[in-house]
Length: 86
Image 1 (cartoon, rainbow, N blue to C red):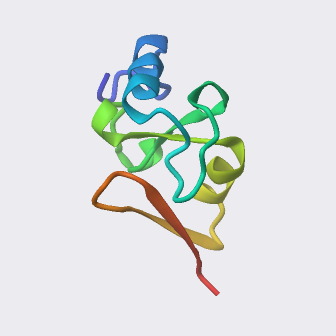
Image 2 (image 1 turned 90 degrees about the horizontal axis):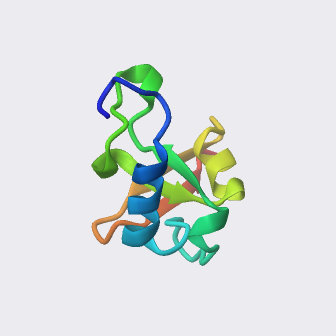
């Protein structure tokens, strides 16, 4: 979808569920049906609504991703690590 849509469309969410199988936060195994599609590069900062930029996060980890007290990074194997800024 690129910049055409801010939100992931149903077929993209289905593809993410097939690819990722669970919440992508390190150590979390929340099922994909309970997860949100999150932009690793924020849409508001010119990120794209594409599968390569999308990651499934459970509601808890999705809140952390938007919490300025935490930073997150995608690890080489695809999971996301959250770290408190302290």
